[in-house]
Length: 364
Ligand SMILES: Cc1cc2nc3c(=O)[nH]c(=O)nc-3n(C[C@H](O)[C@H](O)[C@H](O)COP(=O)(O)O)c2cc1C
Image 1 (cartoon, protein in one colour):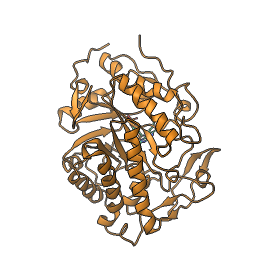
Image 2 (cartoon, helix red, strand yellow; image 1 turned 180 degrees about the vertical axis):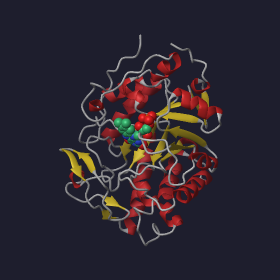
Image 3 (tube, protein in one colour; image 1 turned 30 degrees about the horizontal axis):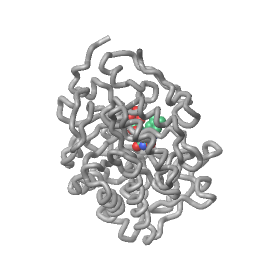
């Protein structure tokens, strides 16, 4: 076993005004343990607290409203019961001296009528995603969503504002706006999923209008130094083709506008989420990073070696790791000591109970 406790990646660091234990972030991961009312069970507090040795935890994506829901058993932050359940989580993480941000989510077209009493999911435009979604009765084909009316869009901005306020009541240290993986915000940003002709579509400036209104509303509640955002310029989900006719121009402008707002960090999925780290469609991660004045959290298939190389090259500030956290609550210790990593069978990723979730042992 190697001794890498002195690794620069594992040393304490400041993120804005927050003191973190190290440069590793637990990436947001949907684990689908909430009940049908979007309330987290008690053992969710154990799960997050067990992982509090990481510098920062970003929670699983959390629905800002009933309309935001896409997948079965995902948590929410719009009811009193949901807030109370999250409060148990933040208190448990803080008892371990950890830091935790809530990821704010609206799935948009990545949803299904089964999640909305038979009504259609909403989206910038009526364009059906490829593939299937996990709803109460298992996997079902996506449907063509309903295009939002112009006057509905400011109401969603207000839903984000309320969700951000509720996150504060629940005791989080900050929030991350989920603008990745082709959920609602990214559906507005991309020119293949936004064919609107009102002020929220058409030109790049118009396509960025709604996401930036959301970010500003969340900043009103938290201050820019407690708000991050997640983006995934290269990701093609839910298809195989690029979602954008000029990805770098789109995301270059987006990142520059986010930088002007003084946001705490951008959290970039480098490549196709979980699958590859390739810089395709003209995307250049380093260049995007240079357009942003705050911190840069890099994600996708990071190991300690790759994080060390990237940090030494000055190409990222923090590194988020997802899948290895599922079966290794003490991942930080295992990375430092070179101890072997446990592997979680995929059957435990989504759904079920505490088994394969909050019962993974730490090393002795
Ligand atoms: C089970 C699972 C659930 C995920 N849920 C989310 C989520 O809720 N929000 C999000 O932004 N990304 C989500 N992701 C993507 C991860 O945050 C991360 O980008 C991806 O796993 C690549 O990082 P890794 O190679 O370190 O696992 C999920 C990934 C997995 C495996």
